[in-house]
Amino acid sequence: MVKFEKIEKLIGVLLIISPILFIILEYYALQHSNLPTLTAYQGFSVSELAVPLGDNITALAPSLKVIYTSTVSNLSPYAFLINIGFVLCGLTVLIGNFAVIKKFVSKFKFIFYLITLILSLGLFIVAIFHTGAPDSEGMHKIGALMLFFGGSSLLIFMGLFSKDIPIYKNASLILGIIGLIGGILFCSFINDPVLGVYRGIVERGNIYATLVWILMSGFYLIFKNSKHNKTNIIN
Image (tube, rainbow, N blue to C red):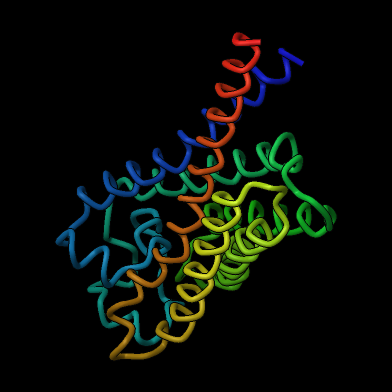
């Protein structure tokens, strides 16, 4: 039992580190881009900033092509760091959910496993297949949809079917709804020449909601074990 508690705590640490690291890596890549910070966060999706330098981007949506001065990605030489962040988050969600978080699910565990796989695979796909390239745009879109709606579905699922953890359940549900709205708005804005300039904000509303949930799950695991250990000491 003690050994498993240590594993839970370790997974909790990993769940905390991965979303924080993602934000740091994204910010670093953004700071070394040719974009003003506000412009990058507001008008550019994470996927666009994650396209490696020199990649073909001729398959971008028409509304996005107007912001590029080249037919190849020229935003940041550190774009690959964002893709590393995607992979790390995908791995920690997969490991954390299948090893530990599953214990918090009251029913419909098959759906929980399925949504977890969809989210994790979505994170892997967007890291490998980049937006804009004719040979990978289709796969990237599939991966992005899996990330957007797999993530928000998982959060909403945990908000509805977590075991007796009111704060965790309510926070998961709220984050899931925020993520769902962000995903729907991003899909609506992407081809709109007017609203498209805000696509970076709404997309991050979706992705960051999932990152916050991962972070929250990590803290819960650590707090849960710390509280349990204190109870054992008192007894």
